[in-house]
Length: 409
Ligand code: UDP
Image (cartoon, rainbow, N blue to C red):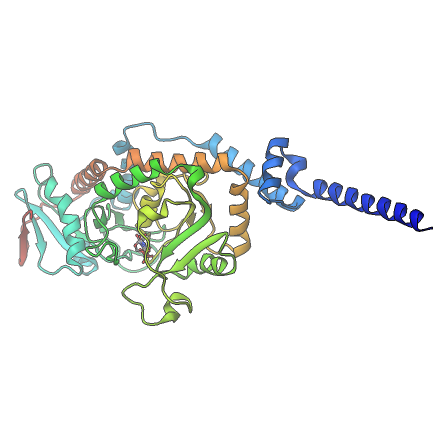
Protein backbone atom coordinates (compact mmCIF):
# COMPACT_ATOMS: atom_id res chain seq x y z
CA UNK A 1 0.00 0.00 0.00
CA UNK A 2 2.79 2.45 1.01
CA UNK A 3 4.77 1.67 -2.17
CA UNK A 4 1.74 2.36 -4.35
CA UNK A 5 1.19 5.70 -2.59
CA UNK A 6 4.84 6.66 -3.18
CA UNK A 7 4.56 5.83 -6.92
CA UNK A 8 1.39 7.92 -7.20
CA UNK A 9 2.99 10.84 -5.32
CA UNK A 10 6.10 10.77 -7.58
CA UNK A 11 3.97 10.69 -10.72
CA UNK A 12 1.84 13.57 -9.42
CA UNK A 13 4.91 15.75 -8.65
CA UNK A 14 6.41 15.02 -12.10
CA UNK A 15 3.12 16.01 -13.75
CA UNK A 16 2.96 19.31 -11.79
CA UNK A 17 6.60 20.08 -12.68
CA UNK A 18 5.90 19.43 -16.38
CA UNK A 19 2.84 21.70 -16.31
CA UNK A 20 4.77 24.52 -14.60
CA UNK A 21 7.55 24.40 -17.24
CA UNK A 22 5.02 24.40 -20.13
CA UNK A 23 3.14 27.26 -18.52
CA UNK A 24 6.27 29.40 -18.21
CA UNK A 25 7.23 28.81 -21.85
CA UNK A 26 3.86 29.77 -23.23
CA UNK A 27 3.53 33.00 -21.27
CA UNK A 28 7.13 34.20 -21.56
CA UNK A 29 8.63 36.26 -24.38
CA UNK A 30 10.39 33.15 -25.71
CA UNK A 31 7.62 32.17 -28.11
CA UNK A 32 8.22 35.34 -30.14
CA UNK A 33 11.97 35.60 -29.88
CA UNK A 34 14.92 33.63 -31.11
CA UNK A 35 16.10 30.86 -28.81
CA UNK A 36 19.24 32.90 -28.09
CA UNK A 37 17.21 35.91 -26.90
CA UNK A 38 15.01 33.56 -25.04
CA UNK A 39 17.95 32.10 -23.18
CA UNK A 40 19.26 35.51 -22.21
CA UNK A 41 15.89 36.81 -21.08
CA UNK A 42 15.41 33.68 -18.99
CA UNK A 43 18.82 33.95 -17.43
CA UNK A 44 18.43 37.60 -16.39
CA UNK A 45 14.96 36.94 -15.09
CA UNK A 46 13.13 39.27 -17.51
CA UNK A 47 9.85 37.71 -18.44
CA UNK A 48 6.94 39.55 -19.97
CA UNK A 49 3.33 38.78 -20.65
CA UNK A 50 1.79 38.43 -24.12
CA UNK A 51 0.53 41.95 -23.55
CA UNK A 52 4.09 43.20 -23.08
CA UNK A 53 5.09 41.35 -26.25
CA UNK A 54 2.38 43.27 -28.10
CA UNK A 55 3.76 46.57 -26.78
CA UNK A 56 7.26 45.49 -27.74
CA UNK A 57 6.18 44.82 -31.33
CA UNK A 58 4.58 48.26 -31.38
CA UNK A 59 7.88 49.91 -30.40
CA UNK A 60 9.82 47.86 -32.95
CA UNK A 61 7.39 49.05 -35.66
CA UNK A 62 7.67 52.70 -34.55
CA UNK A 63 11.47 52.54 -34.66
CA UNK A 64 11.44 50.89 -38.09
CA UNK A 65 9.09 53.57 -39.43
CA UNK A 66 11.22 56.36 -37.93
CA UNK A 67 14.31 54.92 -39.66
CA UNK A 68 12.49 54.65 -43.00
CA UNK A 69 11.19 58.20 -42.82
CA UNK A 70 14.33 59.88 -41.51
CA UNK A 71 15.95 62.19 -44.02
CA UNK A 72 18.95 63.84 -42.45
CA UNK A 73 19.93 67.26 -43.72
CA UNK A 74 22.94 66.41 -45.86
CA UNK A 75 24.14 69.97 -46.39
CA UNK A 76 26.84 71.56 -44.32
CA UNK A 77 25.20 71.71 -40.86
CA UNK A 78 25.49 75.48 -40.76
CA UNK A 79 23.29 75.64 -43.85
CA UNK A 80 20.89 73.16 -42.27
CA UNK A 81 20.53 75.39 -39.22
CA UNK A 82 19.53 78.17 -41.60
CA UNK A 83 16.16 76.44 -41.88
CA UNK A 84 15.53 77.30 -38.23
CA UNK A 85 16.53 80.92 -38.79
CA UNK A 86 14.22 81.11 -41.83
CA UNK A 87 11.31 79.79 -39.79
CA UNK A 88 11.92 82.19 -36.90
CA UNK A 89 12.34 85.23 -39.16
CA UNK A 90 9.29 84.40 -41.29
CA UNK A 91 6.83 86.48 -39.22
CA UNK A 92 9.08 89.51 -39.90
CA UNK A 93 9.60 88.92 -43.62
CA UNK A 94 7.88 92.17 -44.61
CA UNK A 95 10.55 94.08 -42.73
CA UNK A 96 11.21 95.49 -39.27
CA UNK A 97 10.71 99.18 -38.57
CA UNK A 98 11.88 101.31 -35.66
CA UNK A 99 8.46 101.36 -34.09
CA UNK A 100 8.25 97.60 -33.77
CA UNK A 101 11.55 97.63 -31.89
CA UNK A 102 10.30 100.42 -29.59
CA UNK A 103 7.14 98.40 -28.84
CA UNK A 104 9.03 95.42 -27.49
CA UNK A 105 12.01 97.21 -25.95
CA UNK A 106 10.99 96.26 -22.40
CA UNK A 107 11.15 92.54 -23.31
CA UNK A 108 14.92 92.34 -23.16
CA UNK A 109 18.26 94.11 -23.37
CA UNK A 110 19.02 96.36 -26.33
CA UNK A 111 22.17 95.71 -28.32
CA UNK A 112 23.56 97.71 -31.23
CA UNK A 113 26.43 97.20 -33.64
CA UNK A 114 27.34 100.62 -35.00
CA UNK A 115 30.53 101.45 -36.88
CA UNK A 116 31.79 97.95 -36.16
CA UNK A 117 31.52 98.42 -32.40
CA UNK A 118 29.24 96.57 -30.00
CA UNK A 119 26.99 98.55 -27.65
CA UNK A 120 24.56 97.50 -24.98
CA UNK A 121 22.18 99.41 -22.79
CA UNK A 122 23.75 99.75 -19.37
CA UNK A 123 21.56 97.36 -17.41
CA UNK A 124 21.53 93.67 -18.03
CA UNK A 125 19.23 91.54 -15.89
CA UNK A 126 21.74 88.65 -15.78
CA UNK A 127 25.27 90.00 -16.36
CA UNK A 128 26.87 86.56 -16.81
CA UNK A 129 24.27 85.68 -19.44
CA UNK A 130 24.91 88.96 -21.30
CA UNK A 131 28.61 88.24 -21.12
CA UNK A 132 28.06 84.72 -22.55
CA UNK A 133 26.19 86.25 -25.49
CA UNK A 134 28.67 89.09 -25.97
CA UNK A 135 31.47 86.57 -26.43
CA UNK A 136 29.80 85.65 -29.73
CA UNK A 137 28.63 89.14 -30.74
CA UNK A 138 32.15 90.53 -30.42
CA UNK A 139 33.29 88.07 -33.09
CA UNK A 140 30.80 89.48 -35.61
CA UNK A 141 31.86 93.11 -35.60
CA UNK A 142 33.72 92.99 -38.89
CA UNK A 143 31.05 90.98 -40.62
CA UNK A 144 27.83 92.84 -39.76
CA UNK A 145 27.22 96.49 -39.16
CA UNK A 146 24.52 99.00 -38.33
CA UNK A 147 22.08 96.78 -36.61
CA UNK A 148 20.14 96.65 -33.37
CA UNK A 149 18.05 94.05 -31.61
CA UNK A 150 16.36 93.22 -28.33
CA UNK A 151 17.81 90.18 -26.60
CA UNK A 152 15.91 88.44 -23.82
CA UNK A 153 18.16 86.89 -21.17
CA UNK A 154 15.29 85.45 -19.12
CA UNK A 155 14.54 81.75 -19.45
CA UNK A 156 11.01 82.44 -20.57
CA UNK A 157 10.25 83.62 -24.16
CA UNK A 158 8.47 86.94 -24.54
CA UNK A 159 6.37 87.16 -27.71
CA UNK A 160 3.19 85.16 -27.29
CA UNK A 161 1.61 84.43 -30.71
CA UNK A 162 -1.96 84.78 -29.60
CA UNK A 163 -1.93 88.15 -27.84
CA UNK A 164 0.31 90.93 -26.59
CA UNK A 165 2.78 93.05 -28.52
CA UNK A 166 4.49 91.46 -31.49
CA UNK A 167 8.01 92.28 -32.56
CA UNK A 168 11.43 90.70 -32.97
CA UNK A 169 12.84 89.51 -29.64
CA UNK A 170 15.75 87.08 -29.40
CA UNK A 171 15.34 84.28 -26.83
CA UNK A 172 17.27 81.07 -26.26
CA UNK A 173 14.27 78.74 -26.06
CA UNK A 174 10.59 78.72 -26.94
CA UNK A 175 7.56 76.63 -27.82
CA UNK A 176 5.35 76.90 -30.92
CA UNK A 177 3.20 79.37 -29.01
CA UNK A 178 5.94 82.00 -29.19
CA UNK A 179 7.33 84.10 -32.02
CA UNK A 180 10.69 84.73 -30.35
CA UNK A 181 13.73 84.35 -32.59
CA UNK A 182 16.02 81.68 -31.18
CA UNK A 183 19.70 82.39 -30.49
CA UNK A 184 22.30 79.94 -29.15
CA UNK A 185 22.13 80.11 -25.35
CA UNK A 186 24.72 82.09 -23.37
CA UNK A 187 25.66 78.83 -21.65
CA UNK A 188 27.61 77.66 -24.71
CA UNK A 189 30.23 80.03 -23.31
CA UNK A 190 29.24 81.16 -19.78
CA UNK A 191 26.36 82.11 -17.52
CA UNK A 192 24.68 78.68 -17.24
CA UNK A 193 23.16 77.52 -13.93
CA UNK A 194 25.65 77.59 -11.06
CA UNK A 195 25.60 74.37 -9.05
CA UNK A 196 28.14 73.19 -6.47
CA UNK A 197 30.03 71.18 -9.11
CA UNK A 198 30.10 74.09 -11.55
CA UNK A 199 30.20 77.06 -9.17
CA UNK A 200 30.98 79.55 -11.93
CA UNK A 201 27.95 78.35 -13.88
CA UNK A 202 27.72 75.75 -16.61
CA UNK A 203 29.46 77.08 -19.68
CA UNK A 204 32.45 76.41 -21.97
CA UNK A 205 30.65 73.90 -24.12
CA UNK A 206 33.94 73.26 -25.95
CA UNK A 207 35.45 71.89 -22.73
CA UNK A 208 32.37 69.92 -21.68
CA UNK A 209 32.06 68.48 -25.19
CA UNK A 210 35.65 67.29 -25.22
CA UNK A 211 35.53 65.74 -21.77
CA UNK A 212 32.12 64.14 -22.15
CA UNK A 213 32.90 62.88 -25.63
CA UNK A 214 35.94 61.15 -24.19
CA UNK A 215 34.03 59.66 -21.25
CA UNK A 216 31.20 58.64 -23.61
CA UNK A 217 33.64 56.75 -25.80
CA UNK A 218 35.60 55.20 -22.97
CA UNK A 219 32.58 53.86 -21.09
CA UNK A 220 31.52 50.71 -22.90
CA UNK A 221 27.82 50.00 -23.16
CA UNK A 222 28.04 46.69 -21.31
CA UNK A 223 29.94 48.31 -18.45
CA UNK A 224 27.17 50.85 -17.88
CA UNK A 225 24.57 50.26 -15.19
CA UNK A 226 21.23 49.02 -16.54
CA UNK A 227 19.34 51.76 -14.79
CA UNK A 228 17.58 55.01 -15.65
CA UNK A 229 19.23 58.06 -14.10
CA UNK A 230 18.30 61.67 -13.43
CA UNK A 231 19.63 64.40 -11.14
CA UNK A 232 18.27 67.89 -11.13
CA UNK A 233 16.10 70.32 -9.26
CA UNK A 234 12.32 70.55 -9.44
CA UNK A 235 12.21 73.31 -12.05
CA UNK A 236 9.17 71.57 -13.50
CA UNK A 237 6.69 69.13 -11.97
CA UNK A 238 6.89 67.12 -15.21
CA UNK A 239 9.87 65.48 -13.53
CA UNK A 240 7.80 64.08 -10.63
CA UNK A 241 6.65 60.81 -12.26
CA UNK A 242 10.24 59.60 -12.69
CA UNK A 243 11.22 60.66 -9.16
CA UNK A 244 8.24 58.75 -7.75
CA UNK A 245 9.00 55.69 -9.88
CA UNK A 246 12.55 55.77 -8.54
CA UNK A 247 11.30 55.83 -4.94
CA UNK A 248 9.08 52.83 -5.70
CA UNK A 249 11.58 50.92 -7.80
CA UNK A 250 15.16 52.00 -7.05
CA UNK A 251 16.53 49.01 -8.96
CA UNK A 252 15.02 50.27 -12.22
CA UNK A 253 15.49 54.03 -11.73
CA UNK A 254 17.76 56.33 -9.74
CA UNK A 255 16.13 59.76 -10.05
CA UNK A 256 16.41 62.31 -7.29
CA UNK A 257 15.83 66.00 -6.83
CA UNK A 258 18.72 68.28 -5.96
CA UNK A 259 18.56 71.77 -4.43
CA UNK A 260 18.54 74.87 -6.54
CA UNK A 261 18.79 78.48 -5.43
CA UNK A 262 15.03 78.64 -4.81
CA UNK A 263 15.08 75.62 -2.42
CA UNK A 264 13.56 76.36 1.01
CA UNK A 265 12.55 73.00 2.47
CA UNK A 266 12.06 69.33 1.59
CA UNK A 267 8.71 70.32 0.06
CA UNK A 268 10.74 71.74 -2.86
CA UNK A 269 12.33 68.33 -3.43
CA UNK A 270 8.98 66.48 -3.36
CA UNK A 271 9.15 65.79 0.39
CA UNK A 272 12.57 64.15 0.46
CA UNK A 273 15.93 65.59 1.44
CA UNK A 274 17.83 67.01 -1.54
CA UNK A 275 20.29 64.61 -3.16
CA UNK A 276 23.94 65.56 -3.73
CA UNK A 277 24.65 66.84 -7.22
CA UNK A 278 26.24 64.54 -9.78
CA UNK A 279 28.62 65.63 -12.54
CA UNK A 280 27.78 65.11 -16.20
CA UNK A 281 30.63 62.58 -16.48
CA UNK A 282 29.08 60.47 -13.71
CA UNK A 283 25.83 60.40 -15.68
CA UNK A 284 27.65 58.40 -18.38
CA UNK A 285 27.85 55.38 -16.05
CA UNK A 286 24.16 54.70 -16.66
CA UNK A 287 22.57 53.21 -19.77
CA UNK A 288 19.40 55.31 -19.65
CA UNK A 289 19.41 59.06 -19.04
CA UNK A 290 16.38 61.31 -18.70
CA UNK A 291 15.97 64.86 -19.92
CA UNK A 292 13.09 67.14 -19.02
CA UNK A 293 12.22 70.76 -19.67
CA UNK A 294 12.94 73.08 -16.78
CA UNK A 295 11.53 76.60 -16.85
CA UNK A 296 12.24 76.42 -20.59
CA UNK A 297 14.48 73.89 -22.43
CA UNK A 298 17.13 72.43 -20.11
CA UNK A 299 20.82 72.76 -21.01
CA UNK A 300 21.23 69.14 -19.88
CA UNK A 301 20.17 67.55 -23.17
CA UNK A 302 23.27 68.23 -25.26
CA UNK A 303 25.53 67.09 -22.42
CA UNK A 304 23.86 63.77 -21.73
CA UNK A 305 23.61 62.90 -25.42
CA UNK A 306 27.41 62.81 -25.45
CA UNK A 307 27.50 59.98 -22.90
CA UNK A 308 26.58 57.39 -25.56
CA UNK A 309 23.77 56.39 -23.23
CA UNK A 310 20.17 56.16 -24.39
CA UNK A 311 18.44 59.49 -23.77
CA UNK A 312 14.75 59.62 -22.87
CA UNK A 313 13.55 63.10 -23.71
CA UNK A 314 10.32 63.98 -21.92
CA UNK A 315 7.97 66.45 -23.65
CA UNK A 316 8.67 67.96 -27.04
CA UNK A 317 7.39 71.50 -26.85
CA UNK A 318 10.39 73.41 -25.46
CA UNK A 319 13.22 73.73 -27.94
CA UNK A 320 16.60 75.33 -28.54
CA UNK A 321 17.90 76.12 -32.01
CA UNK A 322 19.42 72.67 -32.64
CA UNK A 323 16.52 70.53 -31.37
CA UNK A 324 14.63 70.35 -34.71
CA UNK A 325 17.46 68.22 -36.11
CA UNK A 326 17.25 65.67 -33.32
CA UNK A 327 14.63 63.10 -34.24
CA UNK A 328 12.56 60.91 -31.91
CA UNK A 329 13.43 57.20 -32.08
CA UNK A 330 16.53 58.06 -34.15
CA UNK A 331 18.57 60.16 -31.70
CA UNK A 332 16.52 59.83 -28.51
CA UNK A 333 13.42 58.18 -27.08
CA UNK A 334 10.45 60.53 -26.87
CA UNK A 335 8.38 60.31 -23.69
CA UNK A 336 5.08 62.14 -23.30
CA UNK A 337 5.27 64.86 -20.69
CA UNK A 338 2.41 63.31 -18.72
CA UNK A 339 3.67 59.73 -19.11
CA UNK A 340 2.65 57.51 -16.23
CA UNK A 341 5.12 55.50 -14.16
CA UNK A 342 3.82 52.37 -15.92
CA UNK A 343 4.53 53.82 -19.36
CA UNK A 344 8.07 54.78 -18.36
CA UNK A 345 8.62 51.31 -16.95
CA UNK A 346 7.33 49.72 -20.16
CA UNK A 347 9.77 51.77 -22.29
CA UNK A 348 12.68 50.87 -20.05
CA UNK A 349 11.73 47.20 -20.19
CA UNK A 350 11.53 47.34 -23.97
CA UNK A 351 15.08 48.67 -24.27
CA UNK A 352 16.38 46.29 -21.62
CA UNK A 353 15.21 43.59 -24.01
CA UNK A 354 16.41 45.34 -27.18
CA UNK A 355 19.95 46.33 -26.30
CA UNK A 356 21.00 46.52 -29.95
CA UNK A 357 18.37 49.18 -30.65
CA UNK A 358 19.21 51.01 -27.43
CA UNK A 359 22.86 51.16 -28.39
CA UNK A 360 22.15 52.22 -31.98
CA UNK A 361 19.97 55.14 -30.88
CA UNK A 362 22.47 56.10 -28.17
CA UNK A 363 25.25 56.21 -30.80
CA UNK A 364 23.11 58.26 -33.20
CA UNK A 365 22.45 60.84 -30.48
CA UNK A 366 26.13 61.04 -29.64
CA UNK A 367 27.13 61.37 -33.31
CA UNK A 368 24.68 64.17 -33.97
CA UNK A 369 25.88 66.31 -31.06
CA UNK A 370 29.55 65.48 -31.49
CA UNK A 371 29.57 66.32 -35.21
CA UNK A 372 27.02 69.11 -35.44
CA UNK A 373 27.16 71.08 -32.23
CA UNK A 374 30.65 72.47 -31.99
CA UNK A 375 31.48 76.03 -31.03
CA UNK A 376 32.25 76.78 -34.69
CA UNK A 377 28.62 75.90 -35.46
CA UNK A 378 27.45 78.24 -32.72
CA UNK A 379 29.62 80.97 -34.31
CA UNK A 380 28.13 80.41 -37.72
CA UNK A 381 24.58 80.31 -36.33
CA UNK A 382 25.11 83.72 -34.73
CA UNK A 383 26.60 85.15 -37.90
CA UNK A 384 23.78 83.92 -40.15
CA UNK A 385 21.16 85.00 -37.65
CA UNK A 386 22.44 88.57 -37.27
CA UNK A 387 23.15 88.97 -40.99
CA UNK A 388 19.73 87.79 -42.05
CA UNK A 389 17.96 89.74 -39.31
CA UNK A 390 19.84 92.93 -40.25
CA UNK A 391 18.68 92.61 -43.87
CA UNK A 392 15.12 92.91 -42.61
CA UNK A 393 15.70 96.27 -40.90
CA UNK A 394 13.91 99.02 -42.86
CA UNK A 395 15.98 101.79 -41.27
CA UNK A 396 19.60 102.50 -40.47
CA UNK A 397 20.04 102.44 -36.69
CA UNK A 398 22.04 105.22 -35.02
CA UNK A 399 23.76 105.01 -31.68
CA UNK A 400 21.15 105.32 -28.94
CA UNK A 401 21.44 107.46 -25.84
CA UNK A 402 22.93 105.73 -22.80
CA UNK A 403 24.35 102.83 -24.79
CA UNK A 404 27.74 101.64 -23.51
CA UNK A 405 30.44 100.09 -25.61
CA UNK A 406 31.21 96.43 -24.89
CA UNK A 407 34.79 95.44 -25.40
CA UNK A 408 36.37 91.97 -25.15
CA UNK A 409 37.68 90.80 -21.77
N1 UDP B 1 22.99 69.37 -13.02
C1 UDP B 1 24.03 68.47 -12.91
N2 UDP B 1 24.09 67.63 -11.84
C2 UDP B 1 23.13 67.65 -10.87
C3 UDP B 1 22.07 68.56 -10.98
C4 UDP B 1 22.01 69.40 -12.07
O1 UDP B 1 24.91 68.42 -13.77
O2 UDP B 1 23.25 66.85 -9.94
C5 UDP B 1 22.92 70.26 -14.17
C6 UDP B 1 21.77 69.90 -15.08
O3 UDP B 1 22.10 68.92 -16.00
C7 UDP B 1 21.42 71.22 -15.73
C8 UDP B 1 21.79 72.23 -14.65
O4 UDP B 1 22.65 71.57 -13.73
O5 UDP B 1 22.22 71.44 -16.88
C9 UDP B 1 20.59 72.75 -13.92
O6 UDP B 1 19.80 71.65 -13.58
P1 UDP B 1 18.38 71.80 -12.90
O7 UDP B 1 17.72 70.48 -12.91
O8 UDP B 1 18.53 72.46 -11.59
O9 UDP B 1 17.59 72.85 -13.81
P2 UDP B 1 17.18 72.79 -15.34
O10 UDP B 1 18.08 73.81 -15.99
O11 UDP B 1 17.38 71.44 -15.87
O12 UDP B 1 15.78 73.21 -15.32
